[in-house]
Amino acid sequence: MKDAVQNPQRVVLVGGSSAIGVATVQRWLQNRQGLQVVLAARPSPRREAAAAELRAAGAEVEEVDLDLADPDAARVQLDQALGGDTDIDVVLVTAGVLGDQEASWQDVDAALALGQVNYTGAVLAGVLAAQRLRGQGHGALVLLSSVAGERVRRSNFAYGASKAGADAFYLGLAEAVRADGVQVLVVRPGFVRSPMTEGLKDAPLAQRPEEVAEAILGGLARGQRIVWSPPAMRWVMSGLRHLPHAVFRRLPI
Image (tube, rainbow, N blue to C red; front, top):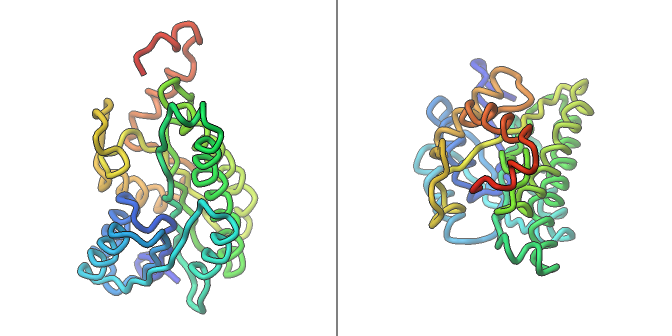
């Protein structure tokens, strides 16, 4: 259960090495020392570094192996991450891969691998997390989506399509579980400077993981369904979404 001032006491981070996920937990730790955090991700130096960083900031961290690319194993691993006798306040689903955008429409294995993590994995995590939160009668589920799913572009349509599918699923899930006391928040960041985008040129309105973390906390506090980060991306993407295709296809995006 959240404490008297509405800070979470237990958080599960699906995608435990995510820079945005870790930044969000760090933000909670500013107000809640001893926060219980489950980092569910593939074993890696990045997960180890994230766990060490959060422990140093005052969190109680449990590391759970999770490979969303393997659906059979992932279900068992997610059950472990979401288990225990203590209620979960927030489940953050931040796992995702950018993939090779050219390979993802020419190589069937690359295309399916991208969809497996970004869409199927997100759906698996969302359904299992929703079951857990419904059973306890409270909690929040957060999906890290992307503005790339608003209108897919030639440069990254495979990634954008996978995010669009997960985004739509979670918006529907929000309506399905609303009466059970569960909040579902979909977060749509623009370009974020993180390990996922390392080596890529900054896009307009580029931001840091900490800025997206603030958007997540604000959206949860206000009970929102959708949060854009930065807020101006809502209007940028609205304009792009309504452009005639003949114009849209000529944009250098």
